[in-house]
Image 1 (cartoon, one colour):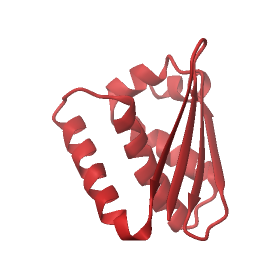
Image 2: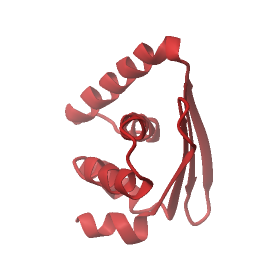
Image 3: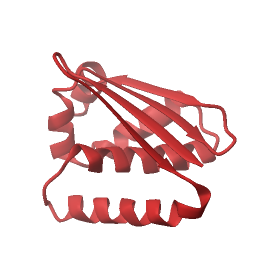
Image 4: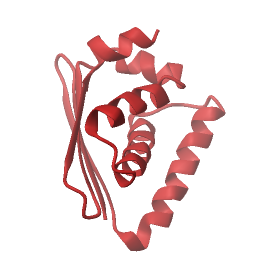
Length: 122
């Protein structure tokens, strides 16, 4: 079971979105990830949902590899640094909190402030 909740905060805006996939539908999750990644690589329109799918995929993979939260956060920023347009969008976001409950692993809280951590990638 994959359950990921995104809380995205800007100066005057708070967005909460959830993604959930059961074991029987993980192939659909992989398919959606492939489509999002392909769309991004073709330099087509980038949207918040694509960002969430990319993040979710990498978070799931790393939690299943039993990595600690700090490593997941750093690896996620490295992955996102490949997509300049996302980073430009994320610069305007104040804070992103991600709660991830994957399979039987303990819930992980992944947090980063774009003002502090994303800007150093430029």
